[in-house]
Image (cartoon, rainbow, N blue to C red; front, side, top):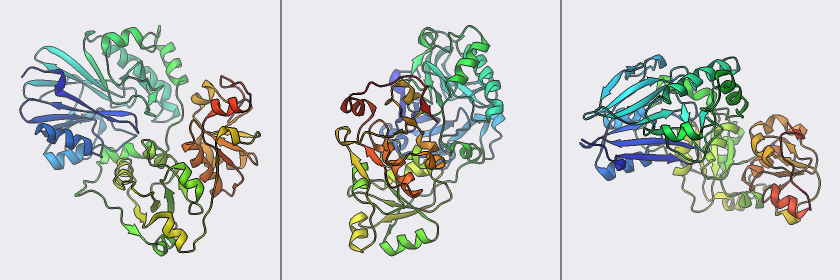
Length: 459
């Protein structure tokens, strides 16, 4: 058929920091690689070109999202291509190292690249004998490699050494071969994340510091040292992907609920999640509600902070699309979505129910005193307010007692800090102030110089 550049359609998930790929095979059929359960963008791209997805390839058993391969098999009749070592419990074509699949003009060759997971495959796309590009999943990623600690601390170094050998193997491909990773900037599967989404083998040999490691020991040491925390839900999804996510017959609903229905759900152990902007939450919210503003990172923090088996009720602002709640939640396996409060906070207030508020102030009005930085440790090390206590948002619920009285809670802009304040409120700590801004603005307002490095009060 001849492969043109526009035959490859990257589908970027900015929130999870991942890329899926749709490959136009030139005859009305397509290959999808590492598609997530939220298939809206993929279906749109396929429909625009009049394509049916004939093949759905997964590079590994994903931990950060539910695979869309089973759904594509249902919707399009796609053949699922995946590692035989993954022992998937649904119909698929099991592949091992060097196995090839004829796509009808193009060929897909499996390359065993363990490291991120035991059963990881990369997929080399060939046009005749010409090696076009390689879908590297969670193996070689732009200027880095994916993390190797998802199978437990006791396996981390072993898998890092496997990752070293996998990257060295991929580096033997011709320099002009394109590198199409799944994980990238913003993905907690990256270690650490880079800014670019795609590259070439030659470029990675020049710029990837892990490929420049002099030996396996140095590589493993550098990779393991770069690993930060990751969302709690990662520990659950691999097995769901092995069994195969349930097929969805239609878009999941999010029904409207009146005030009394919401109260009944709360009495039964449900949880309110307020997805409005941070400033709206601060001005008035349902007591005990967790603030997770509806933005690209919504799914990450939903999965990190709330259990997957709790009924969830959402408070929205006027004009917010409930589909942007439902699909990100289902993408990470959160399906107990009870509904949303009809009429939002105005309905709650009109019904005479109690309303809580949170102080949310710009740097110039923020008090000088204890400062809690809820960013990731790497962000903290890059520049923080002197004396700041670093309590990562993902760990905060377990450390609420460590929060000093009257503290300023801050992140980079204010969204994560408001989430942190909502968690502290649930723990009975209602005396905090949330900074609308980040450390640089606070330091400037209080004539301070930012500290750098991990030393200090990181916890």
